[in-house]
Image 1 (cartoon, rainbow, N blue to C red):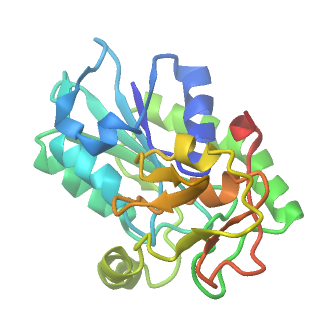
Image 2 (tube, rainbow, N blue to C red; image 1 turned 135 degrees about the vertical axis):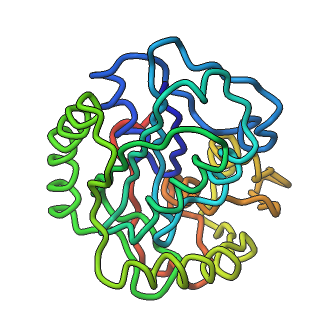
Length: 258
């Protein structure tokens, strides 16, 4: 069973590639599963592992994924192996250590942890933008071979970490991640410009059901995951995060163009 949280489509793309080789279901973390993790009981099919797929948030586990791991009800989770496959633009710090602790605290068995480098999508701070078209294309082209290697390691029962940590990994995860989580994830700066065409796509696509349409314009509530799906998927690029996204690019992988 593949449990996937994806905002802009990178992690979903990796989850689908994993599914193509491993089979089984992809459980998309959205809507009720995120808003009320204990409200639905999932069950791991006999003989299957659980593969957790998610994007790295500032060198840590996305808060909504951490919350789901802590509160979810998953039958068979104690009897199977758990693997992590996270996506990142460059490196993950020690996010795998955080994931192992979350899984271990449930009494589950964390095994191999892997990272897959994918196109950068974070645009909400100065100095952060999407990749150039060439770099984006090269990262996407390398993904299938990377996933194939991960699957081989899983089948061998690999229990270590095969990840890109980057420099100052401990500092990034132990210091920067908590700061980011508590001070840089507010939805308040989100807004829509006059270019908005009132299509409602942002509202329909929000995995947290956090965007409502009022008088034809999107309004953000307070339970945002800061996944940036609304920003990147807007067909007319009308959504902004304050002034931080001025002049920034947008990203939409093929699997999200629907």
